[in-house]
View 1 (cartoon, each protein chain N blue to C red):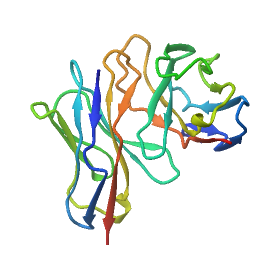
View 2 (view 1 turned 120 degrees about the horizontal axis):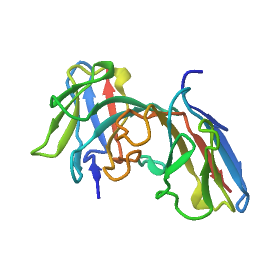
View 3 (view 1 turned 90 degrees about the vertical axis):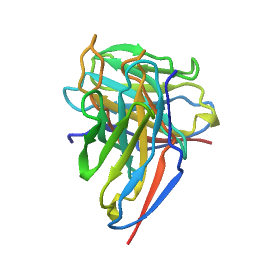
View 4 (view 1 turned 90 degrees about the horizontal axis):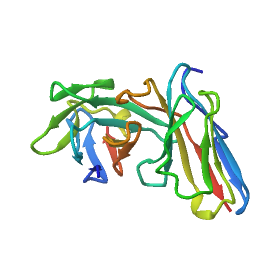
Length: 114
Length: 118
């Protein structure tokens, strides 16, 4: 069975500093990985995905993620955080046996302080 | 609008009543998904469709839950004889994709329906 883990419930960072949100995964076969962001009272917004190819994936709003097969990780990164990046971030993996099914992590709350 | 639309945004009902939640996907999106999200948790898969065909309903908790997408566009998630444990945010998503191919297209989510069972 596939799963994702987000080991940090909350990440605090000062504006302008680098932001990293951690995600590790477990899946049989090739992993298809996604990051989403959720703002209060809103739906999840797609940030980026890894399907195949370069290990560094660039996405929306200046975010990028690094796929590391040996460490089974897919950490989300942003070189310089903004206060507006404060939100709930979810990592997800596609179920290889059910093409439409995403398995989400529990989420990481990011707080960026001015 | 251009996004996934869900209605109602909020639904409060008494235990034992039936509820129907509606999802209008992005125009042209083949695939449609339903998830349930408890407070402080990530979304949990319920079911998904390609066009009008229900491809996977393995996440539906029990037979009180059902979903349909009769014309391959709008979908309805129905919960019969609601119980307090059904209270959650119900999220719909849609994506480009075609039957028979791995669906690696990103799923685009609506704002959800907050269901509260009294």
